[in-house]
Amino acid sequence: MKIGILLKEGPYNHQASDTAYKFAAAAIKKGHTVDAVFLYNDGVTNVTKLMDPPQDDRNIAARWSALSLEHGVEILACIAASKRRGINDDLLIKGGLITGLGTLTDIAIRNDRLVTFGD
Image (tube, rainbow, N blue to C red; front, top):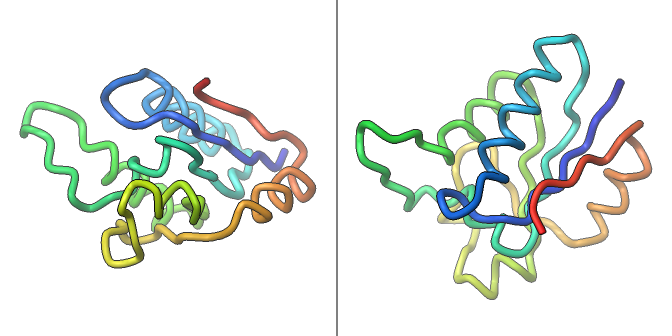
């Protein structure tokens, strides 16, 4: 099955980021294809390389980067939400890309499922 993910919450203040990542990793492990993760609203803050968590905490941005680089999952941040939060291409993790909201429609059309995490 081909799966697209929509993540609408930022890291560390809600469980949505962790749950979305664990869902994606589990789906890939079971043989499914995770085509793309589209970050919207505060979700765009998941892919900023300015994130510097303590050593004993998980690095959510690094997780998304690894998922992209190791499994070819597109990690896409909404341009309007990114601009509102001061995030530009220079601040993105490896594997991250800023794109338009129309890409979310494409993800929904080309995948069997679009799973949403966050309010």
